[in-house]
Length: 148
Image (cartoon, rainbow, N blue to C red; front, side, top):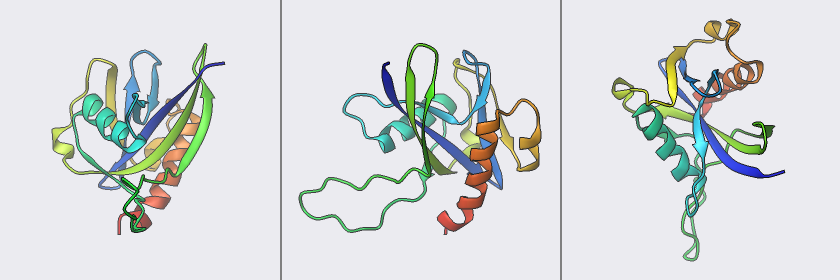
């Protein structure tokens, strides 16, 4: 079965996490998408977030290990990775914790039905998928230690 490499970012602002209501999948999900050819996961994440919701973010958990001359860059470590089925193929998804830089610029594109900023308590609503809820809870747990 074909497997695509994809990324997703859980964006935090004022103790809330941003989720989008995906029009095609009819699910509440983090912002994300496919990694294009010749693109790093970090570049793909920043691009997808800008395309889908119009904001800039800081990807948290970036390495502070110095680079030697033959290395181009350090990539951010995802907090979670999984493989899931999306019909006729699989997605290997790298999940990241992000901090919103300009949340007032948020606007959704045509791929999305809606968006929402969710508190921990909001995640108990029936329309939030089980795996997304659990990933969000982990993100809230990680955010304070990563954003220092």
